[in-house]
Length: 293
Length: 159
Image (cartoon, rainbow over all chains, first blue to last red; front, side):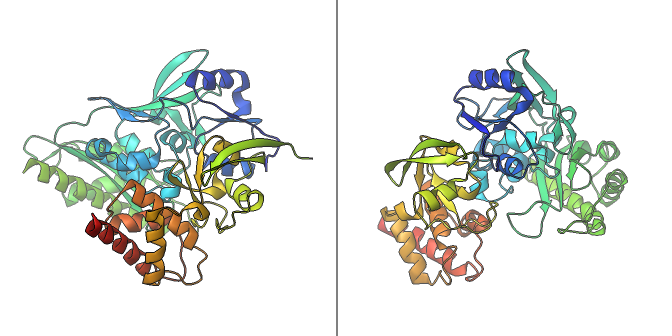
């Protein structure tokens, strides 16, 4: 245990940014600590000081019409139960409610889930299909926003500078006649990382016949969750029937790489991904049809 | 000698000050320094729920929570849950036969107290979701879920 590590509990963003400016790469940010404490105790992450940001004022919550703002310190349980998020960005709420158990979700935050950038972090696929941006702030340079796809560099690697803190996620409004969902394949009902997960946002044209736009993000099929842009392009303009789904699934598989671990074999992941994707398409199609009826 | 730091928090309604090392877990402090051994150590990695306590009313795994982060907060352990709602939960679990070896029981009671404070009348689906982070290898959960449903229905009948 890093027994000699300093631990500073902070209550304001200004204070946190000031400490980050002076400690930089020697500091690690800790909110609920569900991931960070394990990383520090195991030696996976090394730091001289832990900056405890869990109790910073004003960095939690969901607000805004049109483009919505999700505070980085919003807990996963609050996201899972927020009626506004459930109705506007359903997949985000679903994913938050599937990460660990309630004891984890009570204190784990959106910012922590994204910035840890674990290979199967639950919030990544649903935020990727919303084209979410991450807002970063630093004392020296003020604020900037970055597309989530640019922010995520590799497993456990992001574009966050050592003196920056993630403060929010910005989610553009969903188009008309659209629905989103998160399908997670796992061995148990909870307390388990996904074997494969698919987030999908489907939008239909006015006649509800053809796909006007689709966004697909997959996890468990590479180092980090990714947007399957080739598959998205193939589906646009076509009816979301069996043929189109099969072609899109092939395009997803073409850029996937699967690994074998104690949860599942690579061949199982490869076999289950097209089914998870097809299931996600049918959930979204049904939801759009039900809303249009 | 390892450096320690004083932390003051409200534990079961009483202000306590304890010395904490580095990233020492809240569970170790509760069990070894405050002698509140009702909080059980199971997996030590936040997967089994045996160490669940309420932190400012919210259920958390104390084995993974940094004790120094608890400065100024309110902590409730199984020993402190003697309010009417928690007592109804305990009685209902006993009457439904929801205990066999008993090791997971404190964590489950704490989790259910947290659930029923947040949701007065959860349905079976929500109860099972809430319990998904508490591992019980004896009962199969059915009796525990029945007990909670009984508490919810009893509450509804009483109101």
